[in-house]
Image (cartoon, rainbow over all chains, first blue to last red; front, side):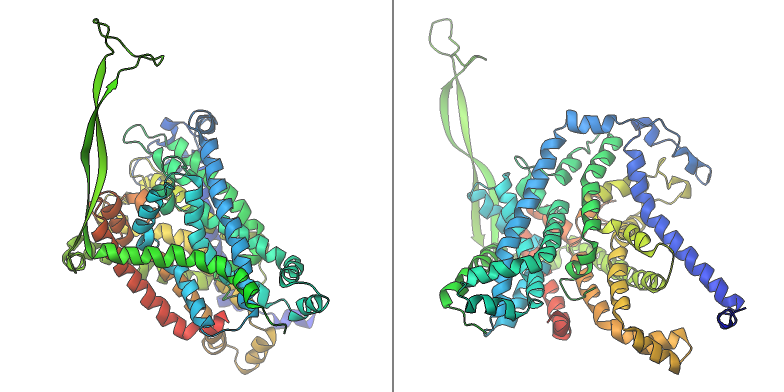
Length: 292
Length: 317
């Protein structure tokens, strides 16, 4: 017996605690994954099967949930009759459009902020981050009025403008962090060789490219999941998936299968994208305050 | 460091700064303007016109006497009038019982929800911060709710909490029909979605604590509790504060879940502040009052953000 085994003696109490901890994690995982699982399963159910009735207090009733014949008709219905392909495109165009505009303008501004010192820079920063945290509803009414006058309500450019409003401050904030990590020496060498500032900026872009890419995805995610702007500015001509999903809810004969299918169509791409950038997630979601 | 020519400086800075200025300061100014006005929007008849009736092919339909058939078309116009009413909108907000109800709902939601998320997140991060099987994979599963679209999640939980035949109906709990339970349900959904965020950030912070530090601390004490109390927690404190700030700012805007899961009901039991302000503005078309309410919320959020930032600036620099 190696000496290590002796040292690693565990009292029964420790073992019990370990088991409890494992159980807690397992239960939490189940609680996280079950709703998503239910959404998937329900999207393949017919209306009648979706609400089979177990009696109150009947534990076996839970099994009723799995008693159904799978059907893909809701997906066919969404894309065949309800124009979900269009809404999907709208969502994608609005989200991607605003992400690209935010990242392009944001990276230039962030680069300059990272390299120049000027009076009031900190205040400018504070102002930028507070615009990101301010409640959207505070500018909702005026934005709607302005957009209506510019005839941007119900158009994709309108949505892109609106989303850029909340993605751009975020972009400036995060990207500045990325540029701060790039040494000055590279640009200095370039500019001594006669490069212009813009060329020098372009030369360091590859260094921050992974961060920018991850951040672009995050911007897409925020815009994609938005409902408040979409329902006011996008409704009509530029309906996005969340708004379209909401319209599936009719006063009568609600097709829950269709709504769940719409939920899957909306949520699944974002989950995949989110997992793709998980290395940058902590930095992105805490606005650069915590790094991994 | 090579100096910037001022022209280039502006080229880099100006587009973004102008954009943010245009779409935040200007609407905000307009919002303040609106909040001191009584805004009435009504449809008025602005004119009448005789237009020929066309058939399906686009040809004019003729009357028996050979003249084209006509109909009267009424032209309507949306007219908006602004009347200065000093602080009437704000005074109304402080007297409005629905506002106080919304404050209570949002307050409960924020207090209970955010506290639970942070505590649960800390516990989970602590449990994950050791060698457990398939940690990376499990972590990926854990964070899935963060990416879920709130609208979809709201409807998903509507079916889950459905009291007649939903998957939780066997509990016999009035999930959505009882005022207190409905608010609890909204909080549960928020906890489901955002605990993973707290967990993720706390886990990253825990992993960022240097091993040497923990090892040398372990020489002084054998108790895990002391280790947390005197070493880990002080190091986590700024991170907890940041998570708290971000969650507070986000939770105060509660809208999507309420709009889908409960529609503010039963009655107004889960009507959050944003939901109420939104409805006043876009359902009742009372732009002035809605702006005043929104502005009050903005002040609250700004106070919170400012207070936190006094303390947190270092983490961001």
